Image (cartoon, rainbow, N blue to C red; front, side, top):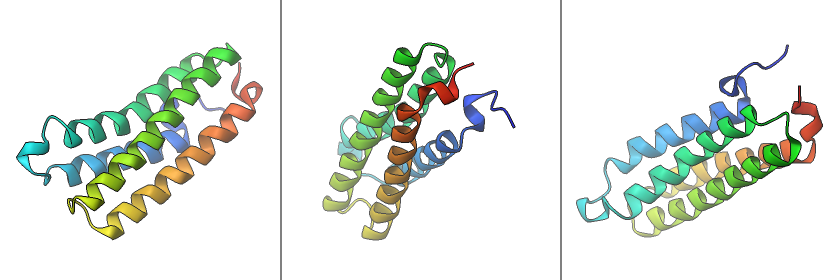
Length: 123
């Protein structure tokens, strides 16, 4: 089966669901975090998806494809850092932090694998 849209990528689906979970959890963050931690964690988690969408559209240009995947990797790692802060500040549970960081580890692994085989995604 040929993938025709970034939305069909398992890694995109994982990242989208994780971003939505973060959005729901971050609704409970304190008001004083609205323009700092809340904004940052939402932005970085959403950027994983948006960079993946861009990468998919640039897949006929291997260097551009890999560059956008690298941006997505960076945003995923940044999201993990914000999750660590969220846990240490006691805004999320240890269980939520561990589960989401494991999901982002899976996302990162998939992004790395895609980057190592850009020709597989070209058309």
